[in-house]
Image (tube, rainbow, N blue to C red; front, side, top):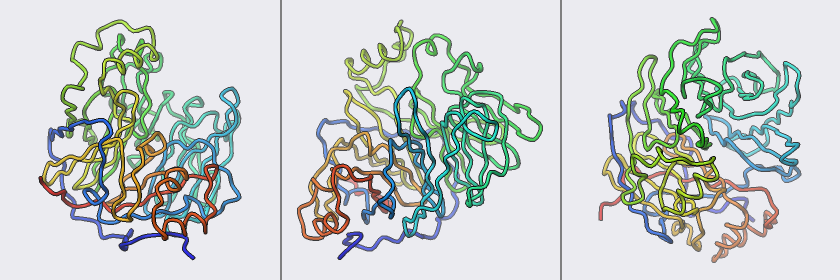
Length: 391
């Protein structure tokens, strides 16, 4: 009997590569073709699957803000109705997949959160961003509330830069602030610097959420904000364009955003109909690889860019030829991913695994774990290649 199935061994705890400095203005060109497969063997050295959480007694809701740290996975799970959502934060051991902690502290009191928009997993604490409450709640890994930090805006996402410094992202909320990004000192309650002025015309109709805005790799911090096709590097006092995307004929024309749109629904409908890729829904990176997800014609796509060879792989289908599985469509669930060192962690649905099986190992995995379409999501763990083959 097996709780996991693999063909080649995956070493999760890998030595970190030597620190390298990000290059300026590296452009990745993605060739988009509907129903194009990304073969695992093209971008991964290994792939394996696990139950996201060893305990099957807890039924998870909609997962948001999936995060990976040196020891844990963390995410927000939302249940209930749109009018009365219930948000819990789950912290799971990254090695044995045991449930470490559940934070369920929703309410209107100062020590409670009203509506969570982001989480941060540090080495010694868990930080929760309460957008509506304009505060950050800091917990230890035993679930004890250590402190509450008041912030000046209704931040959509954040990053702890250390020494009481925080990066706060406001999205396009013009009623909140005049800038998308700020660096805030929680000790002095002073905004040290602000970046990227909000375009009032674009803000009148555009408000997009991404899986993550901030990514840390080897002491370097990166930032992305839609609808740009740029990932920036952040330092204490500068913001530098570092990676850009080129989707060819699917790029949004420069003057397109000057048009009048009623709201985000009107904009999305017209832009999807026009066949443009207008924002990245999630991204992750390490020294060698950039991974992004996005929509084209309402279909989720995933793309891989290798920084050593500048080779790219892109598609809306994934085929695990490493484990001899059938192809499955890259869907909304799979946009919940994170890159930690040289490993990609991605949420997959039980249906995707069940429908992909075509060998005994996979069927044994499904039967042993009693997987059904109603089971909790699983996690796919893949070691990224250092280089992709150049064809």
